[in-house]
Length: 318
Ligand code: GTP
Image (cartoon, rainbow, N blue to C red; front, side, top):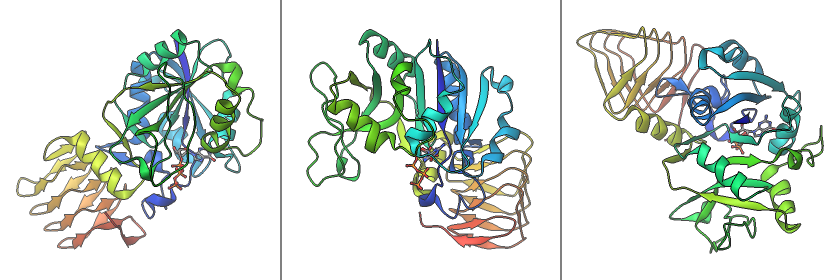
């Protein structure tokens, strides 16, 4: 068994304007918030308690996830008044957890189908201080890379570079032995990637890489968020409970239609993410659009690559 921390407090700057009114982890992917997909995966791996480390737009999480009983998992909340960075957030959230089980940390913007349970087992078998999920990419130039030796031990944390020495990158899911978390200073701004990990490796601590090539996507940009949603829809469209679509409307391109949304006659929706309680008016044509929860799209509106909310209409680059 294990406990976990979900990092959900970042500003999500690269996802603007989608994150103007919603934190990135609450953006819907195939009808459910990114965080909800992660909670389902954590539960499947035997994690029984999760702390959501929130900061930006922190109030949005509690009404949705409550105490977690709907998902059969205990959910707690650690709110940072000012963002503490990834390392500071983890240390702050760990105050709510015991110290007798491994602590699994999730970046709140990753969709991954790797086996979290196998990663925890690997961590225990290696008697590691920290075990990172590593994923191989074709071109690691856009990422920092994480080389390992034959035993799987991490030998360096390298920043982005023109000729990466390894194709393995940090996939954003870490297992920590609890005592190691306590070495991060409490209440300070710390980056786990730029400070904690390089320091642990330099001081020859047992930092291991768990390599599993499963489906993996960082949904940190609008194009990636749309891809993640299409991948999970895996067909023309998905309708969430209570959604009503007129028989003459056409929905395609891996679109997701949120709960209790109404799509009126003759509307055309191609490769869109449509939130909950939206009304898409008669004959409206939307392609590659993100429509926030509760928005009314007027009849006959024609929009392409647009973010629409009740108060804003802004272009998005996909
Ligand atoms: P960008 O601004 O677009 O880079 O996005 P981001 O703010 O989400 O940053 P990044 O993608 O580097 O963050 C990785 C994960 O850590 C995301 O799930 C963030 O929500 C989370 N995160 C980043 N900074 C903080 C922080 O200061 N506090 C908390 N609680 N979470 C954070």
